[in-house]
Image (cartoon, rainbow, N blue to C red; front, side, top):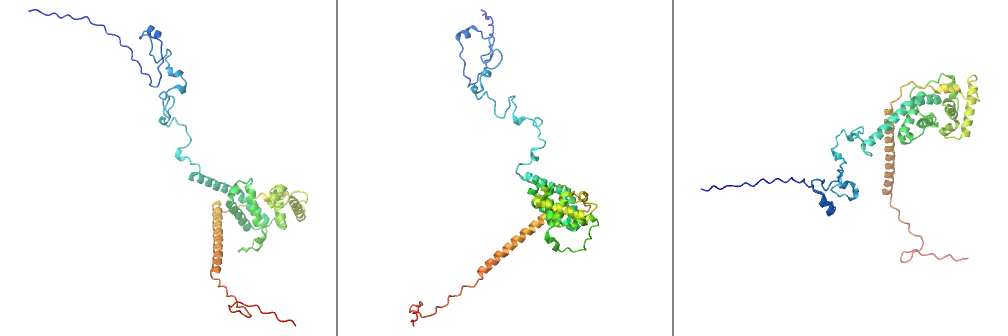
Amino acid sequence: MSQSTTTQSPPVPSQPESPPIQSQPKSQPSRPRSAESRSDRPETDQPPADRSVTGKSPDADRPQAEQSPDDQPEAGTSEAGTSETDQSPADKPETGQSPAAQPVPGGPGAASTRARTAVESYDALYAEAAPALVHQVFLLTGRRRHAFDSVEHAFQRAWEHWPEVSHDPDPVAWVRAQAYDYALAPWQRFRLRPGRAETPPADPAHRALLELPAPYRRTVLLCDGLGLGVDEAAAECAAGVPATVSRLHHARAQLAEALPGRADADEPCAWLGDLAAAVTTATLPLARSVRTGSERRVRALTRTVYGLTAVLLGAVVFSAVSAPAPAPAPAPHGPVSDDGAPRDEPAPPRR
């Protein structure tokens, strides 16, 4: 038998694999290379065509306007590749309170903040000025209960006009003017006050002050007692500067006459400043009750005006509906023609 001999071919050396060629973006235009540069450079010694020797992408040297939309970062993503929504709470800036706790501008939270600020400011003004004002009105009138009523009325008016009072340069002066006007009103002497009569003050200086006319008392208390200038006292009393100077001069002269060793007609009354510096130690009504009384007074006044207006309109309508029909015109006197029209009488003959 003949044995067939198999001849094995020598192994073919394997070719080294070429490095993978990275795909270029579709939108990137291909750059032409010269044939000489392609033929002279072996494939294994050259870096990939899409990278330069420094390792930077060729797209990095192009201006941003020439880059393709695929190379630009997406909106909401930072340069480091992190989206704004992916940041942890620790990376976000702290605002001091959570977004839910921040009041919305113009919303109900802002309105309640404004109301709370007005109430607190009013209460602070009441606690600061009310005790001193009660004592000052008592010096002007000599009646303690009337002083309490006057100051309470002044603060009720201040709450009704709080936007104006809060923007006033001197809110205490605004309230003081209201209290003085109410206490020294001429109709107060005709007001009935049930209860026992109050005893006159024991201090002779206070009694001498009460002997002055009301405008003199107010002027000398503002200038010598509270230390206001003549211009400020004139503005608060709604008087001219010459009239205020005249009142102050006459008040000092009368006090010097009533208190020979204590006052001088040409000098300010220093004792009046010490007398006005004291404050009342009596218990004052709460600021909340004063505000409630002011609101109740405004509601009652509004209802009264609406009621009177409705009564007046009802009376006018009733008078227009129930008015009697006009009476017919009287029949004409004199001769009447055949058609019923009056006929002129002939003039009497002349003699």
